[in-house]
Image: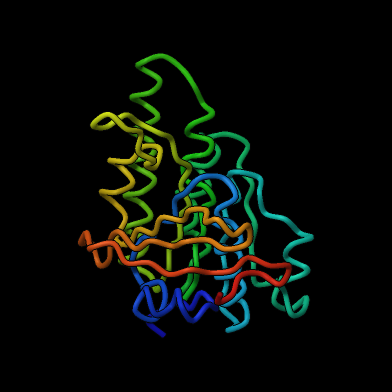
Amino acid sequence: MESLSTGVRGLDMLLGGGFPLRQISLLYGEASTGKTILSMQCALEMARKDFRVFYVDADNSFSAHRLERLIGGPEQAEKIVLFQPEDFKDQVGIIENLENVLTKTPALIVVDSITGLYRVDNGGSEKIFARNRELNRQLAHLNSLAARFKLWILLTGQVHSTPSGGEWIVEPVATRTLKHWSDLILRLRQTPKTNVRDCILEKKNGVEVSASHSLFRIGEDGIGDV
């Protein structure tokens, strides 16, 4: 099993089969574009295959009620280990200690979102520099884990708008650091249809690609093809 299926045929085709093994995959987009529900659905795909999931819920957006609607049974829920860091320092400690619970068995690590607590932890220039260094260290550690274990690593990223050429563009918070470490990047965005999202592939196998995209639907039962 080299690819982790999203459970959505269109997205899997866009990704070349699913999210790649031993790589860092980044989902970014504005609020309510489907980052968390897609992450949860991937977690359930792993649990259904009897693999473990380590889910770092940094944004406190992991919904037990939503999980109950998606999941097939309690034995699958037991495969998902949930961490909820209180602050960015706590997040650093959780990620650095994941190595202690990993085995030779394939597993999925989800961090939703990698920059939520990073963004909340405001401060002066020295504190910002230290925070950037800690974020870079977390990503380097995740990259090392992906190389040494049979892991899929799925990150979500919050966004902000920055001026460029007379217009505003949407990009991930800490964009340079995230884009450096991410092997695969997907941008999620709204569409005119309230329950449909557009998924744009920006980077694959460590190389920026000409934007290709796929639509998916968000419903009570998770996400699916349009």
